[in-house]
Length: 173
Image (cartoon, rainbow, N blue to C red; front, side):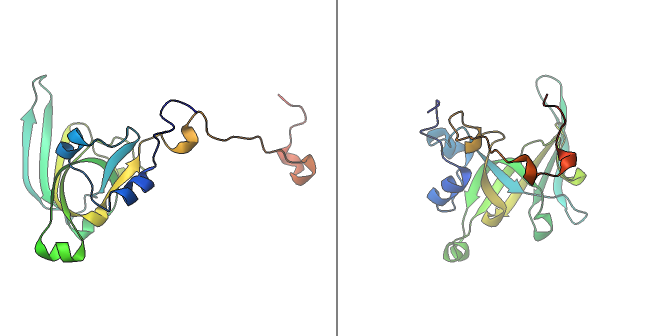
């Protein structure tokens, strides 16, 4: 087995182990997720999204960011984005429903399937009161078990008669 393969756990299995509770950044300092696991949140900017606060901020290197703060609503339930969990809260009613709310920082996302899901590096977006149904654990890119060096692979041979003639090369390269 390759390094780390014995400790490998998929995001799906990690979700089952966590009983639906996603750890905050502070909790991850003491109990980190495996290196292949990342938190993700559904958030989609729509015309219904109202930003409670928007301002510009400059870091030590002189880079300027536009900072947005908003509350999550059902219209935002699209675009799975990587995020950092800042806080988790639960009210009495939510405890009965076994539901939690999360406050998150959305990590920049410069490529996406849908253009409206892009979030440039010069924006910082903080979203509050995201329900647990819109927060998840996901596998980091290229870390699923099929990428382990000891993953089972076997050439699947097919007789040429099973393939259409135009799929076959006259000469093997």
